[in-house]
Length: 220
Image (cartoon, rainbow, N blue to C red; front, side, top):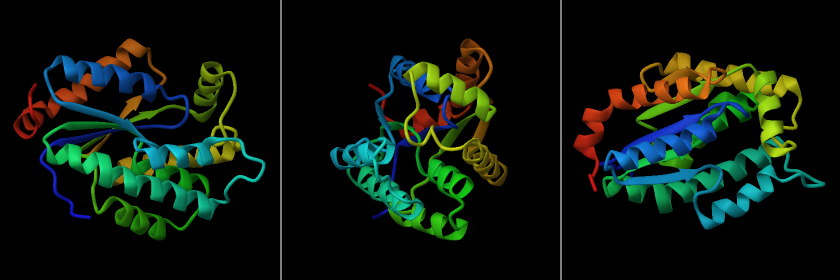
């Protein structure tokens, strides 16, 4: 899978209940208002096969996948997503905005599940063909706050959100570790601030990249 792109790739990350889904919708709308050609997508999902895998991963099955199978299902969904949607859109000069991507796999499967970090990183590179986001917005907040928000929003938790508090704490640590390694790409935003404040901070970070975005992406 060749790593060739002309567009710009933004991902939104964060633990459950961090507000990234709301910011995702607002950011996509703002970018379209700016006249940019936007492809909006999510993980797991964004492709018919990947959406089927999403049901397996997030549904409360009687026999849920174990950590190893869970990892491989996420990677299978991502490989198809990149091949059939993300990479073609980037090649056409779109700005691709994705809710969750490979950083989620590291945070949840390494930080949360405790799988081997080196293997997960290598497998992620294989699944993505080496594709990495140009900008990642990480919405950070304490696990207890995020879980309360997620429960209120959905009137319950999906399988990942139902995991033990120690799992959610590990996820947060995984995300923060990634941000420490790649501060130029991953920008931490306070997910527990008022929504309007988070929206303004989100746009500030994207606006910093706007000269490059307009140079690399098609304008409608």
